[in-house]
Length: 158
Length: 187
Image 1 (cartoon, each protein chain N blue to C red):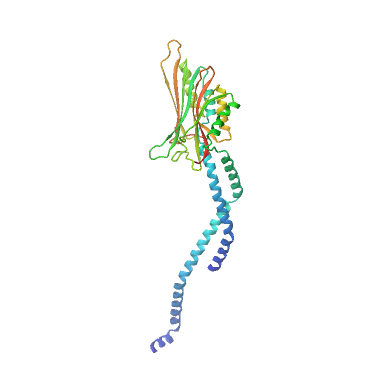
Image 2: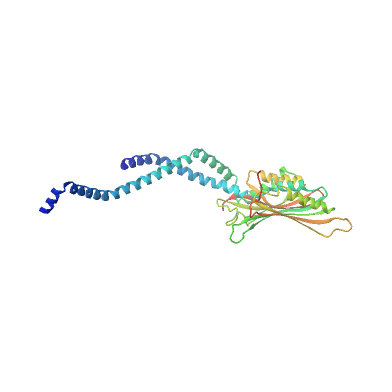
């Protein structure tokens, strides 16, 4: 009984082996080609696209806030014992007449979903320089930092 | 000898039974290894058939998928920059002046690669590479925004990695310093 069962199975294997080899070959071809697509995704893996970032900042900026410089930079961090990861920084330099307007802008950035992309922790910090006694204008700097989130955000879909 | 024959005559059933049991035991012992080997072969074949079935199930529509992904790769590869074609690549950026209301004052190809894309970087590329360009551009806010957008939607695969936008010398004009990374052929 065992011998006849084995012989039937051997025949089945023999019949399907050519098709199986072809499937494996195709599968390998798919894996190699898909790697290119994976690399393309990796190349574009950033939380912000430049024009959207500028447009978002322009949209959040209160009318009485003046930006004189906006910069966006990235950096590679390699913490000990962990894989390398990207951090991003946005620096805004400008002038403001009424300081509450700056606080309002900071709050708007913190609340914006654009500046809270998945997988990143947002930190917004402002610094204020001495007010010009004649014009009443206060120069300011706002730093928006995004670093990889160590623990996943709570909440999400309800 | 006579004693053995006497016992055989005295207890024929017992003696025959003992002989039969002995023959069966020897036969089972001898066939044991054969059965074991056949069972092992059967197990191996069952596993092989299962693998073939799984492969067959997984490869459903694989041929079409392979064709689709190969076509995508061909599209990617024809859009890659060749880092040695410096004048063509540089002219590519200057050509934006013809379509947009911007002034491009400098385009330079950097020798250092984007740190995120090199070996050990978080977005390490193995099949391709990234060439970085410094591009200095000036124009109105809308024109610069449009320039950034055009870079994003270009057929060539590129993105603005970093930028500095500052007030320009004339009123209403901005000056931007960009680092643009372009997907290129592997060196």
